[in-house]
Image (cartoon, rainbow, N blue to C red; front, side, top):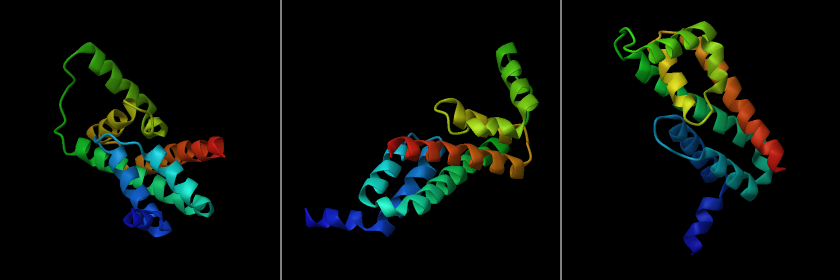
Length: 143
C-alpha cells in the first residue's frame, strides 16, 4: 500500500486533475469534479492551481471537441428539430458555450460551434469562463 502514497504528491495530483479534466470534456465520460474535490481534500493549499488546471484542461478538452466538429463537412440539417437547434446555436453564437460544462448538452454545444464554423477565439473565451465558473462554484460549495 506504500505505493499509493505516491499519488498524494501535489504535482501528481494536479497532473492527474488536468488529465481528468481534459478527458471529461471530450466525448469520453469522466468526473473531473470528483477528482478536483479529491485533490483539494489531499492538498487544501492548492486551490488556485487546482482551479486553474481543471479549467485549462476542461477548456482544452472542449476545444478538442470544437475542432472535431470543425472538421466535419458542412451540410444542411435533415429534419426540422435539428434545424431548429442549429438556428438556436447560431442565434446565441459563442456565448452559448457558457453552458459547455453542462452534462449531455455541453459536448454537443462544443461540436456544434465547430461545425457551424463559429470563430474559435470567442468560443474559447466563453467556454473557459463557463467551465471556470462551474469549478469555482463547486469549490465554494464544498468549503
